[in-house]
Length: 450
Ligand code: ADP
Image 1 (cartoon, helix red, strand yellow):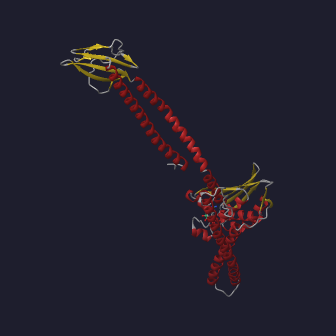
Image 2 (tube, helix red, strand yellow):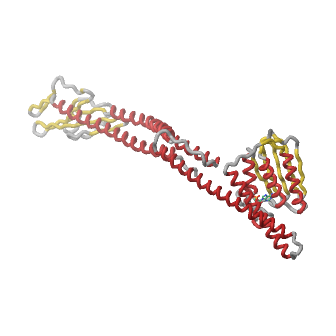
Image 3 (cartoon, rainbow, N blue to C red):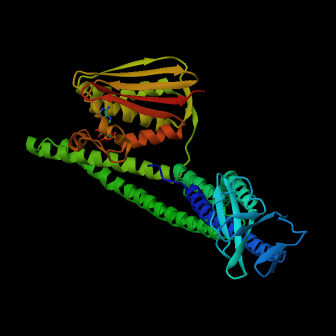
């Protein structure tokens, strides 16, 4: 599953917390308003019923009402019942359940077919054993309506509010973390470009991100230093090894000319010579890589790619003939490019040498050079052993050899293709390989043409 970004995580967390906190507060407010509304109505109705009772005058076994008694006052309707619950005076609101039992001094809410009332009953005794009941009835519909409207409003407003908070929060966090994105981009550029001498630009504010950038820069500093030391070491070692290896080669060649040596001795010396030559190739390739990595300047000039390829093929003709391999060159005219001659020669040398080394005896190598859309497109194609799919990506790595003993036999070092790719990149070109095991391999490259 794709990992969620910090921006999304923070937004979700804080929006979630706001939903819970705000939701709880709003529910509590609604409950509180409902409660307050109800208890205010309770107080109002009980006071009104008590007030209404002052209209009732008791005399011995009977009672009478003041002439100006009002049965409706300020939203409250009053009714008078006898002790059997029979309505004596007043009118009850429509739909109000008539049989609601009388209960003294207890405010209650009564619901009936979507209507809601609050009632309050008060009992008064007179005469020997007589009593009358006064009931106040008021509609609590307005509170109910207010609550319902508020709930509906909240159902619409709440999600909109949350979405708004989420979106605004996301953009605020994005803004705050923009510096982190910038740092990521810069670090990526530095590591992609493999130029450890570059440094991150420091943010203006001296905050945590400033510190992070500084730490990154310190790390790049240390990395650069240790890479530099490693390169220097490789360069020094290769350089120091060149002379002794050259001496071994020349001494072996000198010894091989000695007529007095037996065939066996000569064979042994030939083995030493082969290994020394391999070592010489390795040291010179390592030296070349180290120098290139140290940023050695290259002489870029106008090159005739066709001509250089011809030179390389000519030089490798003897080696190809040892395996009876025919090298066929097909080239168009006008194959000019800007480049370093030594490096381009080296690249073609490595590709065609590999084609011979890993080619079949009596096989063919096609070197095809053409122009396509302002580019020189080249192909070195053999009908040799091929490369299996699992190795195709790895052959570009330094010292990667599929069959070590075979590579060693051919004098291979495992550095050839990594150098080829480096040379192609240096010349703003591209290269890729296509291969079928047992059928053959094709290296296809492109360079900008001039
Ligand atoms: P090496 O010095 O071993 O040839 P390279 O870097 O030139 O090193 O090549 C890496 C590996 O890729 C070789 O060891 C070989 O196994 C494989 N390879 C390169 N070119 C070819 C080719 N034309 N056909 C088959 N295998 C090849």
